[in-house]
Length: 208
Image 1 (cartoon, rainbow, N blue to C red):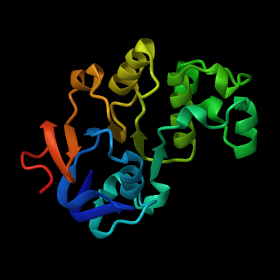
Image 2 (cartoon, rainbow, N blue to C red; image 1 turned 90 degrees about the horizontal axis):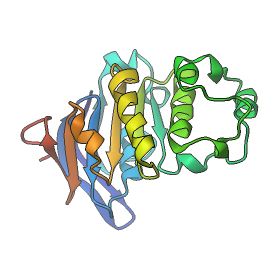
Image 3 (cartoon, rainbow, N blue to C red; image 1 turned 120 degrees about the horizontal axis):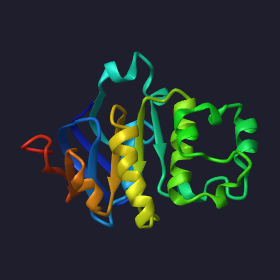
């Protein structure tokens, strides 16, 4: 889905990627060390943060001819804090987006009269995915989506990826090697010491 060609990425004094060349398939899971700013990598891949060297190429078929910034939808690590105390129906009116019409909205029975704070962490994530779909985004990048999940949230997220999002384009950045990730037939990469190395599936040589 995405090809990195000799990419170097820095943030302040931290070198995150160094001359990295790798193909990242759709639905890849990227495991990073705790000190690595995964939010910076996620934004860089989506074109919202500059890289220092190299090129990032995206599969145009998945993009359907649209510019990168209208393709990607980045869900940040602090998604659970967005729009706190706001009711979903007020956000829908404010953004002029009928989220309640989405299939995900209906399946997970998100109450439009509820506030964001009243939803579970998983429901908040589903709400943002519905928002991205309503904006016609085609590639989702999740930054630390399970960081605030409890056991039930994790189980629901597993079935969401397995059943509801099985045909979607996405990347997941995480510091936690959750059991649900190993249960999914998805490639897993490790981001460590400025390299991207395959742990399960993916390219044999990883990021060189």
